Every structure is written in structure tokens, then in C-alpha cells.
Image (tube, rainbow, N blue to C red; front, side, top):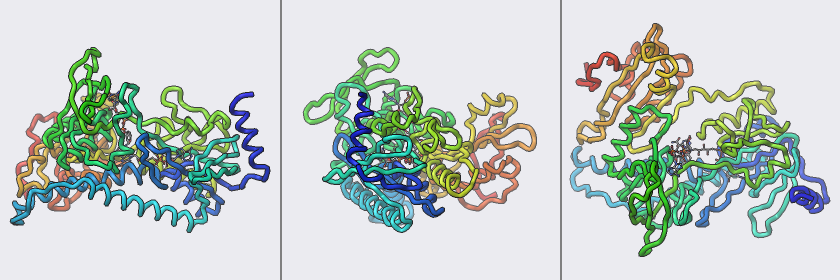
Amino acid sequence: MTLTRTFNLCSRRLFSTKPNDYDLIVIGGGSGGLSCSKMAASLGAKVALVDAVEPTPSGVTWGIGGTCANVGCIPKKLMHHAAIVGKEISHAEAYGWLGVKKPDHHWHTLAKVVNDRIRANNWIYRVQLNEKGIKYINAFAKFVDKNEVHTTAMDKKKTERLLRAPKIVIATGLRPRYPNIEGAELGVTSDDLFSLPYAPGKTLVVGASYVALESAGLLADLGYEVHLMIRSIPLKGFDRDCVNKIVQNLKAHGVNIRWSEEVKEVSIENNRKKVNFKNAETGKDSSEDLYDTIIWAMGRDPNVKTLGLKDAHVQTSARSGRILADEFDRTTTEGIYAIGDVVEGRPELTPAAIRAGQLLAQRMFGGSKEITEYEKIATTVFTPLELSCVGMTEEQAVAAHGAENIEVYHSYFTPFEFIVPQDKDSEQCYLKVICMRSSPQEVLGLHFVGPNAAEVMQGFAVAFRKGLTYKDIVDTVAIHPCSAEEFVRLVVTKRSGLDPKVAGCCG
Ligand code: FAD
Ligand code: NDP
């Protein structure tokens, strides 16, 4: 008898009484699971939401809300803002605020205030679920078969339950990946960073995507020595001109970049972490250094290992382990759906998971046929200067249409808030619109590097979805003075070879 069958029989024996019946069971209480449960309940469905968190190797755990609310977007953005506040203080004197001392940052105060905020949000989620009549079960879920789920509670008694529903949604998300090397356990991940019980000190950040660059940027701005290890290409898939500006800006903020290296092993020396590096191409030993903190930011793996997917015949991708689902979020098993980060090929972004959850619930219980569009989604990297974009990069537009068929309008600009303090960050503030060359010059992509980039891009993303053209942009009368108006002032094409540095501002 296989282990799986043993488990199934045991669960049935444990629960001689009938399982609790629901219209919908949602596994995972993050952005996707919460939005799906709430929408389904408001459409009249009887819903059970099962959510639990596996503690990190150092024992960090958190409440309902998933990655975004606990160890992702929210703590990251609060810490990003804390870094911006430090910069604003350094600008104060230029505006006549005399006597403002050079700020000295206190990590514990920040970590506490961030985590207090998170706990308040956890509470709000629980209240919302209660108000909507959703049964919240703080437990790990495992499929028994395609309609039944066994749950083991997080409480001391490890209370077990059997739940049954004709529809089950998997929204279990991802967790950070650790490298398979000696001493990997001496590093932490973004799951630990925002509640780190000690000031990070000299930090090595390993990785070159969103999490790595955002963590490196905010830690450097909070005053820590940061080394960022990039083994190949930073921010793959983003516009290269813009990424180059972000990398230059990180360096200007004091981030030391270790190019083309990988970590070979980590050990302890004098209570610090000794890292041995190797060349990423040759594999030969390159150098070593001592750090107080190492952050692995090397991508994320799906939370599926203990879900019992085989018992429900739900297939996963051989490449990534993520769940396979179609555009209607249907897995390979009828009645079982999957949404959010855990699904192969989906953008790993909170708003995408939220939208998928809401629309799935509307299709299941509201008679809707609408599916989530994953094209034309805007995104922002919250580095010290933010990078926000929607649509194609210049490289993608060239590959899709040919360089001769596209027009690239671009410009450097000086954000208003950088003028008086003569902030050097203005050297990397840059924006770009890529469009078709022939009339009506349909816009293919918009890119913005500067402060508040996310705020600038959100409105343009709405217009972009509706088929924005270059003429629409430049025919729009600007809001003055602000950074977003630089889009409607764009006239210099790359093809012209003219200097894209803007000279004047008011005429
Ligand atoms: P999750 O939010 O991860 O929720 C899954 C839940 O399921 C978790 O609570 C998990 O513990 C639980 N679970 C797993 N297995 C089981 C089980 N067997 N039983 C019960 N429960 C289980 N996105 C943005 O749009 N903007 C940002 O600024 C941004 N910043 C980020 C910063 C960081 C550091 C990280 C790591 C991510 C960030 N993201 C950001 C991405 C965003 O957090 C995710 O895309 C989003 O949280 C995905 O939601 P989800 O519902 O798919 O999964
Ligand atoms: P990604 O999956 O985007 O990228 C992984 C990075 O780790 C790559 O740069 C990769 O480099 C590097 N890497 C992998 N293995 C190694 C190794 N052994 N040594 C060194 N480097 C390595 O990872 P993230 O965790 O940063 O982000 C996950 C997702 O979360 C993002 O795609 C994004 O959708 C979401 N997110 C969104 C945010 C936002 O909206 N602001 C913020 C944070 C996360 P290589 O290219 O060489 O393989």
C-alpha cells in the first residue's frame, strides 16, 4: 500500500463523522486567496479559507495576509519610504530648515513600527473574513481527493479537520529559494529581513531582480554597507537603458556591485559570515569577504510540496514545480482551480493575484465569463529611484516590429524636489515612450525612472490599456509643475540623435 493511500484511509478513520461541507474551499490566505474568498462569499457562497505559514529556518512566522501583507510589498514599501524620509531630512537645510542634524537611523524602531502595522493588518483581515461569514481555519491543508481537504491546525493541539467542497482553489504562493551550498543556512531571505532582530550591518545581497535590488537600495539608504552580487544580468526583461540608470543610481547610493560572481560557500569566522566567491563563468575561486548579514534573493519556489497534489491529480510544471492552469484558472482536475504566484507563467504581482481571485469567484458563483488579462500590466521596482513601466521594452519592440518601424521618444529630467538641494539623483532621472513609427503611432511601452514612479505610471497604464497613441500623449495639456508632465513634453527621438536633456521648464 502506498503512503498516500495509507494517509487517505487514516484521514477517513480519524473522521468517522461527515466532513464539513462548503461550496468553496480556498487554500492560501494571501492576496489571491483572500480576494477570491471575499468575492465568493459576497456572491452567496459558503466559503472556508485555510491558511498557515511554515516558519523560516530562523523561526520567523506571521499571520493571515500572505506574502504581500507580511513579508513583501507592505513592509518593503514602508522601509523604502523610511529611506526616502532620510533623504528628505538631508535636503532640509537647503530649504532653510537650519539645525537639522545628520540623521542616524535606528533599525529596531523601524522594524517594530513596520511589524506593528503588519499585525494591525492581520487583525483587519480576520475581521473582514468574519464579517463576510467566511470560515477562517489557521491550518495547513492537504488534499485527500479532488473534493476533500484534510487540515492540521497551527494550535498546540494540532486539531485536525476534514473539509469537503465541489470547488477548491489553490492560492498557496511561493517561498524564497536557498542556494544548495555549504553554509546556506547562515543567510536569511526577504521572509526574515523586515523583522530582523538585529541591525543588518555589512550586508551581502545575492540576486539581481526585484527583491535583491530593492533590498540593497533600502539598506544602503538606511546607512548600511551593502554589497550586491549580480551573477549575470540585473532586472532581466526590463528596458536596458532604464536598468542601466537604476544600477548607476544604486552605485551612487553606495551599493558596491560584485559583478559576475557566485557564492561558493559560507562559514563563520569571528562571529561574522565568511563568504567565498567564485567566478560565475569559470567557476574558479575569486575572492572572500566577511559580512554581518547575507540575504538570498535568488527567486522563489512554489508552496506545493505538502499539498498532496497527486491525490487530487493536479499537475505541475516539470520545470518550475508551479501548478499548471488554463486562462480560466482550471487545473488538470475538474473543480480544482489555481490562482496567483503558484501558477506557472503568471506575473508574480499582488494586483494580478487579487484580480485573478475576484474574477474566478465571479465566474464560479456570479455567472461571469470574464478572465484575467495578464497583458499590459504595469509594474514598479522600488529602488531608491523607482523604475516603473508598462508594455514593451525597446529591445522587445525592436524584436517584434524591427528598429525601422518603431520610434523611441526619450528625455532626462530634473524632478522638482531635486532642484533646490541639487540632488545628484537627477542625473539618472529618465523616461521613454516607445511607439510605432507610422501614424497613429500606437504606444508599445512607457518607462519612467525617477521618484514616485509608481504614482506616475498608474494613470498612464489605464490609457495604455485603452490603446494610447503618441498623439494622445502630446495633445494632453500638462499638469505643471510635476514629473509626470515630462511624458506629455516628450519630443526628442532617439533616431534624431538630439540631446535628450531638457533645458527649460516653463516654456
Ligand atoms: P501569497 O501571498 O504568498 O499567499 C499564499 C498563502 O498560502 C501564504 O500565507 C502561505 O503561507 C499559504 N500556504 C501555503 N501552503 C499552504 C498550505 N498547504 N495550507 C495552508 N496555507 C498554505 N508585488 C507587487 O505587486 N508589488 C510589490 O511591491 C511587491 N513587493 C514584493 C516584495 C517582496 C520582498 C516579495 C517576496 C514579493 C513582493 N511582491 C510584490 C509579490 C507579491 O507579494 C506576490 O505576488 C503576492 O503576495 C502573491 O499572492 P498569492 O496569493 O499568490 O500568494
Ligand atoms: P526573480 O525570480 O525575479 O529573479 C531571481 C534572481 O536571482 C535573478 O536575478 C537570478 O539571476 C538570481 N539568481 C538565481 N540563482 C542565483 C544564484 N545561484 N546566484 C546568484 N544569483 C542567482 O526573483 P525575486 O525573488 O527578486 O522576485 C520574485 C518575483 O517577486 C518577481 O519576479 C516579482 O514579480 C515579485 N516581486 C515584485 C516586486 C515589486 O512589484 N516591486 C518586489 C519583489 C518581488 P540570473 O538571471 O542570473 O538567473
